[in-house]
Length: 235
Image: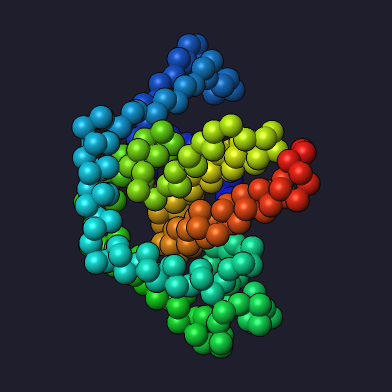
């Protein structure tokens, strides 16, 4: 997925929740504090559990089902192109010269389908305001976000059992790719929604994640397995 460097976290109470302390002894106008520490306050366990339950319930709503269906339809026409953009203008620049490589018949169709899933995500946010406000308490703690966003994550593949080293290496590489994708996704989504307040970027992050877990990662695994068979199982 398209990665965005996480910003340095300052002690800003309006967005993230911090406990800030400093030891300043005999400081003058020309001296720096001897030590300044920043520590994230953990999201309470009951809040994590509540947010996780609410997220599961949200996935059962027509708003959510319609949003994911819209993304799936869009991605099915973009695949197998490996492209990742975070704004409509970037997408429009790309599609104008690459529509023949996609399943879209016109640029207008592309734009309408893009606008559709962005609009549906905005509606999803509006209709689940309590949930998304609760998620904000996670303060970009990856472990907590992985718990809350569990329905969105790609599960690890089932072990194949006793297989040759080449295929085992394929499975190991896939497992690593899934971990990287899942961790990067939850950080990206939190950053887009709660730091940048950019819901178009957030919906694009979800679209990008869906493309990775439903197309890119399975495709790479299949190619790897095919290469193993073609080469007689040698690495």
